[in-house]
Image 1 (spheres, one colour):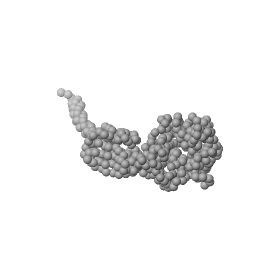
Image 2 (cartoon, one colour; image 1 turned 180 degrees about the horizontal axis):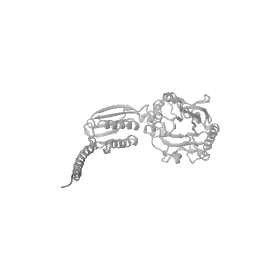
Image 3 (spheres, rainbow, N blue to C red; image 1 turned 60 degrees about the vertical axis):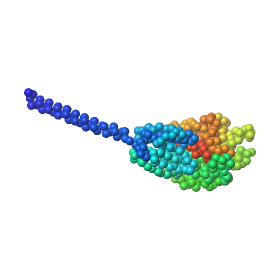
Image 4 (cartoon, rainbow, N blue to C red; image 1 turned 135 degrees about the vertical axis):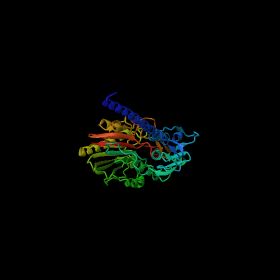
Length: 447
């Protein structure tokens, strides 16, 4: 018989084994519910989420059809760990989540309808559709058996695209198309569309609000559009830069966020009058502004310009006319650099591709295209497309990329202590009907 001490040792080992077995059983019992929890059932309108199919219209632009469909699938997968299929419209299925754009909903509005086993996400544009998708996915994550839901909303007036870390300067640049007539062109009437300033200006305002830039550079900006658009921009805190000495209406204005920036110098230069002096209707000019950030003291120069637009065949000497206008800009930049020694951005519709004499003057003088030096993201897509009074807006272009075919340019000069982080070409489908130029966005860190 073992001695008492040995017996206590054996007994302790036995008890330990029993307890270990007991706790092992408890652990298994605890693991099983966790596994079950990981496979929770999600339902929409009384139907299992896994039995649904996402359906989108093949007639829609990709930004309002296939892209939001993929976005919905991916966000549902992330939130529920369930992947549901996507099909094009025309498939006869039950339990569908339909992504669509109806003719009755305005550009920035959306609607969500959850009932009777069919779900509908309706949006006036891709941005609105994606907002509705976020709401639906969040609601399903909160209520795993979402039985019914009907919601109308809007993205109008909302900031949608926050800045990357480190960005303390955001510039928005766009030619807004000077169509200031109070009638709708016949081609647009046939398409059921309206290109008047009263219709386009609110959409430009939301384009700007969505990104909330520090500085806005516009071209082809008429006094007619100003009467509609400027009050909207004022509501968001912008002020049009002016020295009060412009001898004509400035078609190339600069706006700045007056809460954040203080103007140190503003200049405006009209290139001339009439076709013989390379300035049609007083629209070819530049505006320059030197701005100081009120919080950081950082200083930046910005130039918005529109160069002469005719070709050499119809107007011999046009290339040299644009080159002379570039020389005037470069002289202005030298004045800014000498007085403030700050980085200077030159943006606008220059009616010249990168390989031509006017743009080579910039490049050979040390000006750098922002899309070529962006450190985090650069969109190299062509910046213009079809949209005229006689032709309804479409995504049609010459098929070239930015380097080969763009006539919209954003340069930086004297870029010391400056990092261009992002260059983006903003291309939501609704913008196709606003002008033939997609807006450009530059995110910068002034160090």
